[in-house]
Length: 255
Image (cartoon, rainbow, N blue to C red; front, side, top):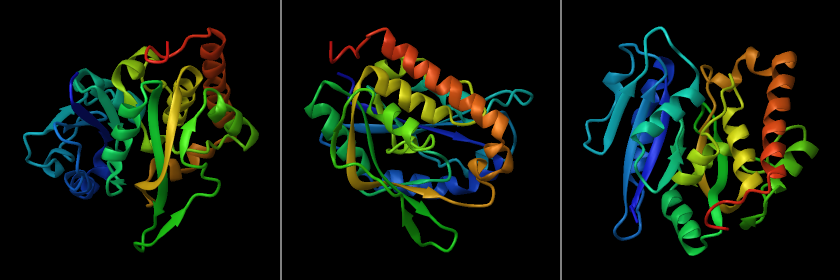
């Protein structure tokens, strides 16, 4: 089996200066013996703003889209899959940082149980003053059964109990569900719900991600909470998850 984790990062000009911190958190990871990581950074569009911040490291691959063709972070991540040849794919947003030991814990969980298709972990908000804040309602450490994320999300105002930005997933499963949704936002939540419709997952209570809060954050813009668009996003996210569940398809490992 390919013993590589491909870390996928979507980036645009305003978030590019944070790549140095993301890279430092990645370099600090200690993987199990025989494993390696490769970092694929995909710019959403094409500018001159990102390349100066890309680390000079043979393990880092930088790709750009077209100058006139920005599609958002979900499209950029899905394009990055063209260069993701590892057995597992890990999400790392350009402005976030991995927690110590995150990659090893995720890998250990999925390697130990072939019926698990994906893993998530606890996330902390990283505030502008450097302090952190936790999310309420983290589940207990252990497996997350099929359909549990959708049920919680639906019952709690469209908030999942695990954070999609902490996701590590088997590459073949990620490709089978079509990657990230073609939405202007919530594309990562849509992927999480789709994965959980067909596969069990895992949650680690150890901190796996520091989720940066800053003024340029895409999810902090007014357009992100526009009621009409938000309702449309939530409707298609739910419909996709329920359609997958209705097919009674299960992840290959579980079958």
